[in-house]
Image 1 (spheres, rainbow, N blue to C red):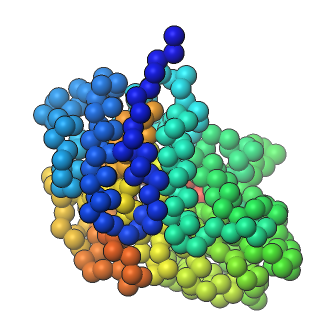
Image 2 (tube, rainbow, N blue to C red):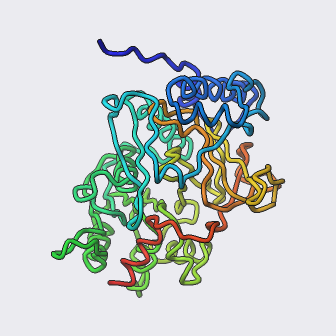
Length: 376
């Protein structure tokens, strides 16, 4: 007999709210209720998390106010690379993805059907709010791993998933395997595809890892102006590009000049396999915290909350996944909260990324991208 899965009504509601970058007291109360609901769900169903809660003296029922969210015991991303923790029977998994590390252990992230649907709803609400949803057939230039060869790789899935917001006319994937079975950046083919797309009159959407796009920009001597309605959304990490002393502002201006795109149509995205909740820059190029997430900054030594403006480790909270107990994740990414309101007009908190902490580099897709670029 198949085990019945309890409903998670508050998680359903918070993950499907409209205008996620506009915070309100009602949304805050719903977020607290969803976190309490999800914490109680995982405590009953994941022995490892239950042990962690007992060891920390944490009772999920104590989550009653916004400030209580910061008391959630966290899972470290390194632990998720070593252990597969689930709260539902493994045959309930509808999608299994891995992080894009190329050495050592990779994170596995699993979704049951309902959790995957909640994750999709979170992404949809942000893209709708930012005006990124269109019914016009669009050409896609994808600077990510070809999903036909990287079926379970998180970034390949997430970037292909973004193609659902505008109908696909044509698409080109710039990172494919060579005859030796190694991932390779098909730079000249990507340049040809870009030139073709620029003459077809359809909007073009450029997605992918900044280091590959930066490498392509070196090949463009005269602007290749993209048709009206085009966008560029980067994601997957900046490590390889920043190693070349390329600031995000410089990269953005250079891409704007090369592709004829307004700066407000060039955005960066942030996310990770272990967390899966999406973040996208607003038109003023700040990362906002949507109402169904929380981003806390932790002092690297004490793990106490850091004040606005102080750099620390990012803790990421999102009550969407019933399959795995990744409600609260302590990342290895460093950042800080802005002290002033964002000039874009949204009232949600904003944060900036400043690098990665720790003594060991986790081999994520950004570092892997740098290796591929150097090899090419």
